[in-house]
Image (cartoon, rainbow over all chains, first blue to last red; front, side, top):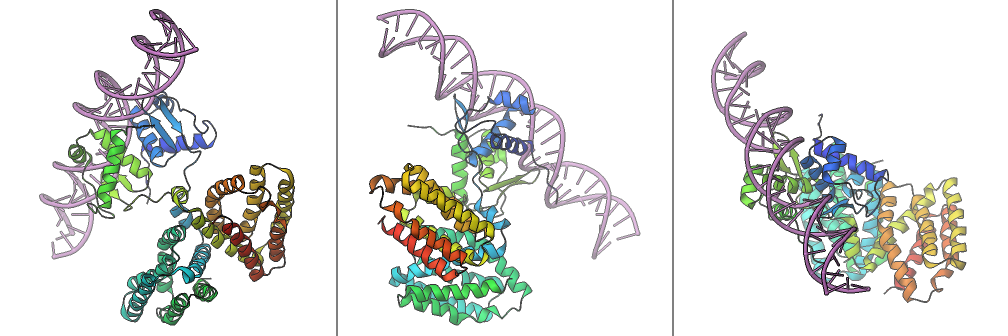
Amino acid sequence: MIRRHPLAEQAAEELLRRIGSGEWTLGEKLPGETTLAAQLGVGRSTIREAVRELAGRRVLESRQGAGVFVIALQAAEDWDKVLRKADITDVLEGRLAIETEGARLAASRRTPADLKNFRYTLTDRKRAALSAPDDWYIEADMAFHRAVVAAAHNAVLTELFDSFAPRIRRAMIDMLKLDDQHRHRHDQAAHAAIAEAIRLQDPELAAARSRAHLSAVRNTLT
Amino acid sequence: MIRRHPLAEQAAEELLRRIGSGEWTLGEKLPGETTLAAQLGVGRSTIREAVRELAGRRVLESRQGAGVFVIALQAAEDWDKVLRKADITDVLEGRLAIETEGARLAASRRTPADLKNFRYTLTDRKRAALSAPDDWYIEADMAFHRAVVAAAHNAVLTELFDSFAPRIRRAMIDMLKLDDQHRHRHDQAAHAAIAEAIRLQDPELAAARSRAHLSAVRNTLT
DNA sequence: CGCTATCAACTCCTCAGACAAGCTGACAAC
DNA sequence: GTTGTCAGCTTGTCTGAGGAGTTGATAGCG
């Protein structure tokens, strides 16, 4: 699958490259659109679209009448991209860090609503484990794990988990395809045990059980 | 500081809003440029710039000849933004999750180079704690903590730590300003203890010491 | 019937030109 | 020194034209 990039996109890359190379530093004003257009040998509207794209990526900012300014020296590393490129074991270790800490905090902070959520997602997971197709099962599994992290009532941890979710989901699908379909579906007890530890408000136990479960998942992938 | 938004920017917001409201779902094709321009009552080039901006934000993708397609239902939450908005305690708990897990992994994976890095950053930190201005001291402190995470040899954890760093750094500056200047500078021993646990290849000890130290930092902020 | 080649209609891509709107620094007037 | 004015720059927007790629319908062929 080849893909030719439009001129505007190439121009954006070129500008980004020049910014990275230090041609213009933070806060500095770029040459005018007409000048840039002449430099790169493209039309003015093409330059405008390139600038717009970098504005969308929060690298440039244009102010009418004043000019175009650099507001970041490089595109904010796209988290999605980092995760896509990363080894799945690295991602799982990241997830392990987030989730065990989440379980630990959840044990002290869980509300009745959180407990209800555990019961709900657990029964759902049980049902899916018995009969549902892979993607349903994975969805149910993830929903429970998300509920655990959500019970920590920490926006950063929740957001982190959500950003990890797509990558994890894909990895699990691959795993189930290659692997024995039913080996991983039978750890319902392990999940219930995590929820139980949180219900009992035992942080260490919750963290330990969460760690044990995720380590097991991780080890099946090595 | 008032700021009137250009039409193209407003158009981008409007498109984003419509996507969020479900008018077009994932993978779906948007109406043509001319149609959209007529709908929003703006020129074609304005629509093009709006689309370009959303392409930069990885929400839309345009393919010549085919159309413009939705590739994400919402703008990827800018990590920086999330962290800026988040409570500092939430951020510190996130850091705690990353760093204790990092210390644990580092204990099994640390190389001689990592150990050398510990020694180097530790002496640097000691020097800075005695005499350097706040920002130097903080920089030296962060350098050591980063070295610990780096020793885990996990790209995801390292990247996470780096994305947290600016927010943590700012919080520490504030903390030192408001607080007794010298209370926090004297925990050199705690830092050395973490490094020592990693050198001894004791994962549990390394994690425990890391957790203890970061919990203490966290508690000074509540 | 099934497959392939052709092609028209549609899409986005790029350019050029025109004018509007906003900012900035210089300079005159006070 | 302060203020007002303004010329010359900047980006913002629209329009019309033609280029290039995609897609689906259709005709032709085995």
